[in-house]
Amino acid sequence: MKARVLGLATLLFFAFPVLALAADESSNDKFNPADEWELHDWIPIHLGPLNMSVNKAVAYLLLGTVISCAIGIVLMRVKVGRDPTRRQALGETVYEVAQVQVAEQGLPTRAIARWFPYCASLLLFIWTVNMIGFIPLPLSDEKWHGVPTFAIFAATSTLSVTLALALMTWVFTHIEGIRENGVMRYLQSWIPDVPKGLYPLIVPLEILGQFMRLISLSVRLYANMLAGHMLILTFIGLIFLVTPWIAPFSVALAAVFYLFEVVIVVSIQAYIFAALSAIYIGSAIEPEH
Image (cartoon, rainbow, N blue to C red; front, side, top):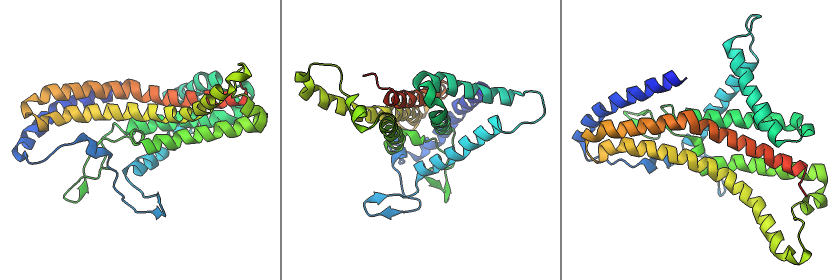
């Protein structure tokens, strides 16, 4: 995997200066990295004020869903021969990370069987969507002679996507907390052991804290993926906005950020989102107070 990433980075390093020289001849074109996050409706679907249209982000999510299912089936379901293969070993490693590092660390033992599939699916799905966001694909809104151009775009760099993922965890957390403890006992668990005179101050803060979980969970993933893509596109864009002779330096910096995002950030953000989801659900099942 690392060899392929390094090969792609090397290709970008040598290819972009050539493109920059060609782009210098058409200086009228304007480059704005923020344009990549303008989502245009491909298939308009409007239900009153609700926009359910298919756009670039939806296309990446659908692609991520298909690839996630394929990875799970190929690594953990398909068996060829009697002896273990590297593919099976990789599948077992992914399963072990989801089981030991995510589920067992955040969920009570009695809840692992119920919520492990959800947490493992989050881990694999978010990792896949993050990863394909760094692979140039012909899923952009820009077209060349009627054909979509290649571009990089992460659906998780869109707040609506990460907010929807966080909302699932937030809803499941409270549903499971109420199912396990009952409404009153679960709501009482939000109130810390403090003098009753402090309740008018503490209770609103605790309620706000529950909603802040929803915001922090979604914004963390969104901000990290957005920042990474913005940095890469900005450094590449310098060869169009400044001078083509800065291309080797700007593309080199873009390649560094690209490698950093692909090798480190993609996996860490998927792990953090899944781990926090397990912790939130586990804390609702067995409140601390």
